[in-house]
Length: 97
Image (cartoon, rainbow, N blue to C red):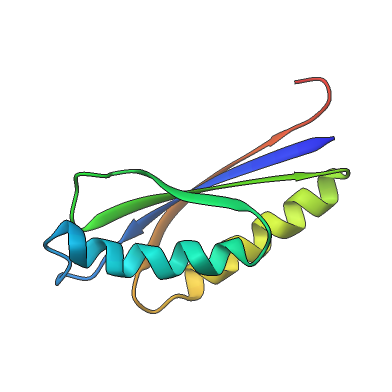
């Protein structure tokens, strides 16, 4: 069994000056990520209005499948026009970890 995680650091548009506005950008991204059958949530920068960190976790029998799913998630986030992807941190955990 292999698990993989990714944290996407996002820059949100300038009009996200309230937590309500921030949620209006983050919620659709998280919903879109969940279509890949991953666990996804806002995990960081919770008090910053112009930034967001979204975490994704996936479990699979093969490491290649974990990488494939995380690649798809990264592409989806990078292609979203409403947010700029600043960085991605990924980790893969195997049976020995």
